Amino acid sequence: MTGTTVKDEGQVRPMATMPPRVPLLSMKQITKSFNAVEALVGVDFEVHAHEVVALVGDNGAGKSTLAKIVSGVLTPDSGIVEIDGEPVSITSPSAAHALGVATVFQDLALCDNLDVTANLFLGRELTRGGSGLKDGEMEQTTKRILQDLNSPIPSVKTELRALSAGQRQSVAIARTLIGNPRIVVLDEPTAALSVAQTAEVLTHIERLRELGLGVILISHNMVDVRAVSDRIEVLRHGRNNGSFDAGTASYESILAAITGATKYTQGGDRRYG
Image (cartoon, rainbow, N blue to C red):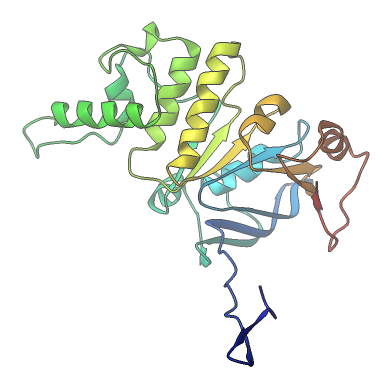
């Protein structure tokens, strides 16, 4: 609203300028190479609170590399990462967790022989000093988180091996909420799921947005992407190749950016409707 004026008893005075909204996560000019292979080259990316941003691209586009940088699994060769406008260094998964970043990779990292509660608190168990675990408190927290996600898992005492693929993904997403994260990275969360299970997971993603988190969704499924995303960012050969409003962009325009039929010129406008 910069430059707008209002009249006040014959006087014309400028309105207060609204400050720009600071992204929850901002990545600027991120570059990462593996020997001679350039995985990412000058990539810009951001996500706000209450926003789902889809990161799409063909195999080898750099999606997983960018996700691993956010998650602290990899460190960039150059570039700036900011959280709430402050530069940060995410040097490890524990550092990412301390900064409020939680990630669900494709392998889920869950244990079939443990129940739902034990999987949510795996490695982060609540203890009574040297006198055992706070089982009741962990179960109540698990029930609350599953309720927040509208998850239909019948019992928190059910072993993971007894759950469907969709319910396992629900447990993996619920696990990210232990520790009150602010940013959640989901790597292909609907891969190999049935239609009903996919709908369940997409509902969980919408709930994460409603809870105020910034969600980064990596997916090859454009139907899922357009169903829950607010914005779609395209990577091609490790470079930005378009930014789209998920509510208005056509499937053809997004596909053209993914395949390289349209190209984003560095320094130009990369937003497409």
